Each structure stands twice: as structure tokens, then as C-alpha cells.
Length: 116
Ligand code: FES
Image 1 (tube, rainbow, N blue to C red):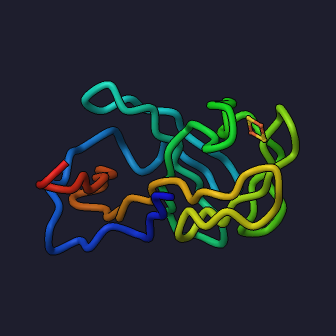
Image 2 (tube, rainbow, N blue to C red; image 1 turned 45 degrees about the horizontal axis):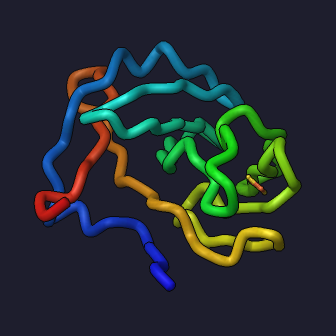
């Protein structure tokens, strides 16, 4: 079983994905980097990026309902922590990737692991 945790920012290459203003608080932004679907959430003013793909059956996780720091997969109801990608509820048992996010010159940057 492969379980992820938030990738170490020191071991990531940061890619600019758009202006910070594109994600109002409570909203989300979908991006694709190197063919990886990623969804970025802003909650309480902070940004969090996770894979836009459920580990259960590849459901479009970013389309799911968000409750606090949890997002609910729209296909079968698995829950994930958007802060670290941890699987919190069945039927998912495998975590999803969580990527570090930073803002540089009003641009959102997502960190992808250098050794991917
Ligand atoms: S695809 Fe997400 S819970 Fe099944």
C-alpha cells in the first residue's frame, strides 16, 4: 500500500499556476501540471493542493463537497484531509498526494517532488 504525506517543500520544484486572486476564500482552482490533475483549495485564507483523483476508484475528488479541511469524494463518499492527503473514511484506504503551495509575487506556486 502506498501512502503519501505532504511532499517536503525542500525537495520540490515550484511551478506557477496562476494569480492568487483566482481563488477567493472558500473556493477552489483546478490545474494540471505534467499531466497531474491537481485541485487547490483556499480555506481560512490558506492554500492547500491535493491530487484531483480519488485513491479508491479515480473519482474527481475536486468536485466533491468540502467540510472544513475535509473533502468528500462525489463517487462513493470517501473523505480526505486537504492539508495532507490522508484518507479519512472508507472506501478509500490509500492517501492521495498533497503538494506544498506558496505565493510568490501574487502568483500561486505548487511544489512537485523532484524525484517523481
Ligand atoms: S472513487 Fe472516490 S470513493 Fe470511490
